[in-house]
Length: 610
Image 1 (tube, helix red, strand yellow):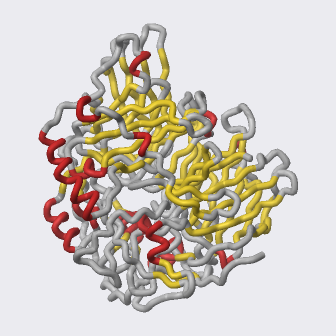
Image 2: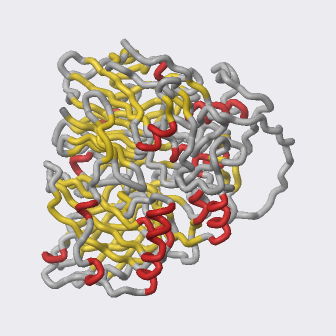
Image 3: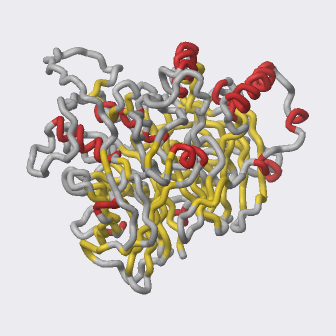
C-alpha cells in the first residue's frame, strides 16, 4: 500500500459565543420554517466526541455534522486493497468500477473556507474484481485550472483565489475578484464511450484517465452544441439585445464560459444513448432560457441536437426524459438587485445576485418534443408550460416514463425529489455561513413539516390525443413522507416504466438531526405502495445509493452506498441486496477504507461495468 501522508481536519470554525437558551412560547407561524436548536461549542474541538455520550446532545450533533465534511488533502498513488469487515463479495457480483465524486477540500491555509458546492473535486474509484473477490480503492483530486492555481504540490499547501459562486473568501481578495466561475468538477461523474468525465454545473467536464485517475484536461462537449443560423431562427427581441450587452461582461470580465453544461445527464437504455443539456451563461440573469439538448451514441458520436428558447427565468439542476419528450421543471428565479451589489463588492457570494421567485402558486413543467419530425402533425406549443397545481422546487429526478393508451391519450409519470420555496436557500445550503465560516446543521433540520424539506414526489401528466393537458397532479409519496433525496432506479429501466425506487432518507430518530444527514436507504414499491428500509448504526450517515444490475428482473442486482462513521472518522463501502432490504441480512459485504484515507461526503456516482 502506498499513499501520500495525510492530515484530516474539520472545516475551520472560529470560536463562537454560546447562545443562552431561550424558552419559546407557543406561536402560530405555520408558514415560517424554524431551525432545530443546535448549540455551538465554546471552544474548538479537534477530536470527535466518544461514542458513549448522548447522541441527542446538541454539541455532539454539531460536531458529527462537521466531521461529515472533513477535508482530505492527500491522494493515493497506487490502488489499495480494501479489507472486508463484514460478509463477502458475492460470486455473482459483476466486475466493474464504482466512481464517486464530490468535494474534497473545504479550508485553505490562509483562513478561508468554501461552500461544499465550491470544494475541489475529489474522485474516488472502487474497482471490484469478481475473479479474485477483491476491491481496490483509489482517490485523486481532479486537476482543474482552479485546483492547479490554488494548490502548491511542493509544500502541499492551499490558498483559495477563486471565489466560486457560493463562497466568500477570508484570506483572498474580495473586491475586484472576478474569478467567480470556479469549475471544480465535483458534482457528477460519467463513463461513456471509453471516456471518464467529471462534471460541474457551470462549464466543461474534465476528462480523467480511468486506470490512474490522472487528469487529462477539459473535454469540450459544447462546441458541437452551437447551432448554425441562431440569429435567423429567432427574432431578435429586447432580451436578446440585453444578452448581447451582458456577454462582454460575463465572458470577458468574469471569464464565464459562453455555455453551461448541466452536471446531470441521462442515459436512454432503450436506444443506448447519452443525453445532455446546456444553456447560455447569461440566462441566469435574464427572463428567458436557451437550452440545447444533445444525444450521443455509444461511441460518443453526436447523433442529435435541438435548441429550445423558453420565455421564463429559471434555474434547473436536474431534468427528465421519456421516449418522446425532454421534461424541464422550471424552478423560478429572479434578479436580486441588492444582492447583486453585495456580491460584486465581495461581501456575499455571487449567487446572492439571484433569489427565488415564489410569485406563482403553481410550478411550470415544460414538455419539449424530443423527435418533432415524428410527431405526425400532432404537437403542442412547447413554449406554454403545464402548470402543476402546487409550488415546488425540483432537486433530483429518479425516473420518467410514458404510457400510450389505445384511444391516443398519453400519460407521463415522473418520480423525483423536491422541496419548498420557503426552505430552499442558495446561500445557506448545507448550512454554509460565509460570515462565521462554519456549517450550521440547523439549516438542514428545520421545524415545520417534512413537506418543506426535500422529499419524494410523484407527478402525473395526462394529455389527450391532440396533446392538450387534461390533468396534472403532484403528490408526495403517501407511504413515505420523511426527508429524502438522491432518488435512483435500476439504470436498465431508465426512461421505461419501473416499479422500484431507491433513495437516501432518514428515520428521524435522532432529535437533534432529524432530517439530514441521511442514515437510511429506502426501497419504494410504486405498484404495491410498500416501503422497506435499511439503516446504519447511530452516529453514522450515508450518501447517494447506486444500483448495480446483474439480471433481467428490476431488483435483480446490488446496491452500493458509502457509510460515513463520523464518530470514528471512518468510511465504509457497503454492498446491499435490494431484495433483502427491510430484513436483518440486507448487508452482503462491508469494506473498510483505511482511516488515513477517510473522505468527506460525496455527491453523485456512476457504476461502470467492466
